[in-house]
Image 1 (tube, rainbow, N blue to C red):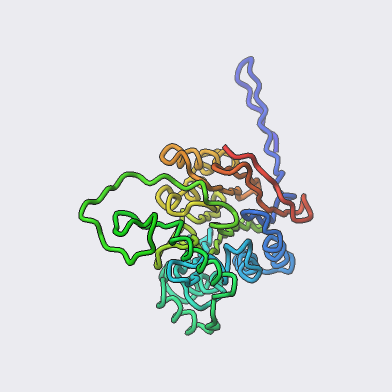
Image 2 (image 1 turned 120 degrees about the vertical axis):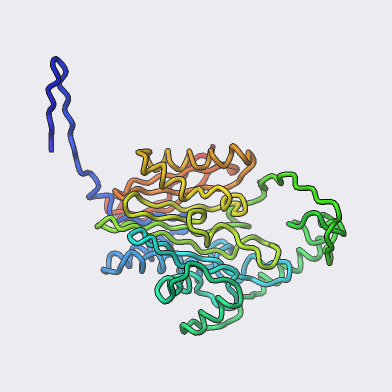
Length: 340
């Protein structure tokens, strides 16, 4: 549609062109987890829902144990146990289902979907989340592998380093504990770690938009290596790990979750897009907001508009790859962006 407006000597032509037909549907996810991208795409191509696509995509990474940072057999906590976090968000209804510190159930994203479908709650945690999953028919099984056990043993042999305790005795930088509280508490800001990266602390974050512009986001992770038992990061937190609003688009994050859950970058990116920013600019502004408070922050963000435009931004690593597919690309494509 073309609209002409005559304003004296000024003639303005406003041309509205719908160029999104070859950009939708679209699947985008963090890192070069291409099997996950393809699994979500196949669901869409076979007529499945956008919710089903996100579950399939994140679930594929759980099966593949993507980089050892998603699914079973990775990121043991201080006690050597692997636990899982996941979430899914429906951009049509703003409904969210999430699980955190899930034990002994491999399909974390599936359990998150069950929280959404079969409860009025948003987030279930720990052993109670496991019992809910078993009640919903999910299989109870061991999340440990030889690899995860060896990672834990090496950590113990290295005096439990890295260590995320503070204000305790004995010194957590030199000792495995057990720990007791110090009488004097120092609450200086702990800088975000630049040791965080793809192979030791990561998430699959995925956003899918179907041809009707329905937006769904999801995440799955086994969290931070050697975390304090019970620790929950950004991945299962709506607005931090991911966010979806079908009026605008969606976003998903990866990296230092303890920092990101304080600043809600996925929600922020969607709001920047709501105000007219492109996905690339929205992601960059959200990352810059984190850097303002935590200059050494390591992490990344993907964003996609309801029309299928995509973008990403990152900090603390040289470059960040993400995977995407749409009708224009025709195949899963890995795109790398240079970090701020």
